Image 1 (cartoon, rainbow, N blue to C red):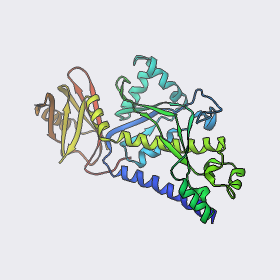
Image 2: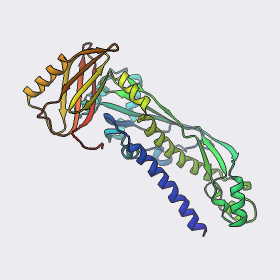
Image 3: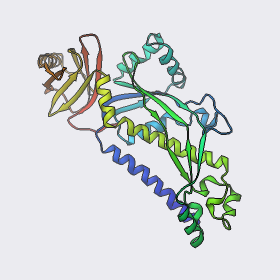
Image 4: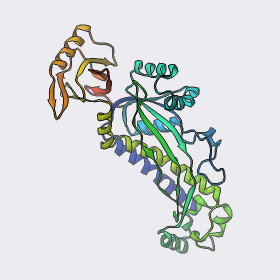
Length: 348
């Protein structure tokens, strides 16, 4: 019976996470193609008290593959992929921090990303390690006591609360210069653990005669339980933050232009007047005459609205359905881009 209840609780947790991502995926994705690089690398910490041990999972407790999976399941962006070069992932954060956008290796990388059709760079800057705060017995102890007394399974009720001080530092960056346009700082919040998750074998045996919430926790078990939940929470929090309405507004303002498609028409709302427009369909370039005609029509549609430059024009009839990258250049030399679905399709 203990094994069956434990399995049921585990499956319930998995279903909850899946449902949360499904709800997030139902919301429209952000209209960007994003390349993920960097890494949640640990560089120090107290091995006796911090949430993550340096050297554990090769010093990267949150992998880019895990992050990629969550962002894809949540349909956060129209297109997303990760940097597969491990050496470059280790080097990119110092380059971005100290290179001031002028280091040749960094400029080459940004240019390659632009050539590959990406709009933004998502950089995992660091996993800032931190200790685990024990908040003690939580309000579930009456349930624990009742199930222990009547059924003998109180050990499965989360009766102690902990909170990791670890933070995941992530930035969203412009692909022209590498400048930061968004820098959420992510925390996991309180974590409730049952005796099965926080205790030792001896503690579990002891709970046969002592209420589980009175049984001492095993530090290694607590670290493992809090660490696993913290990783999951950080990734889910990142997905939620990125797909939030405030983030959409911030990206629109800081990237220089809001770009959207509605009723086969392209709409651009920019902080500066536009001088160029380029369409990059996934299926291949448009005929030169069609591309030039569209650019002229869009630029000629200029209207001022609330101090911003607004443009709108029907998309070329030659344009096939599928992913479409739109790049606009401003009078002062700025470039903004977005990747949208034209005529149907789904985020990847």
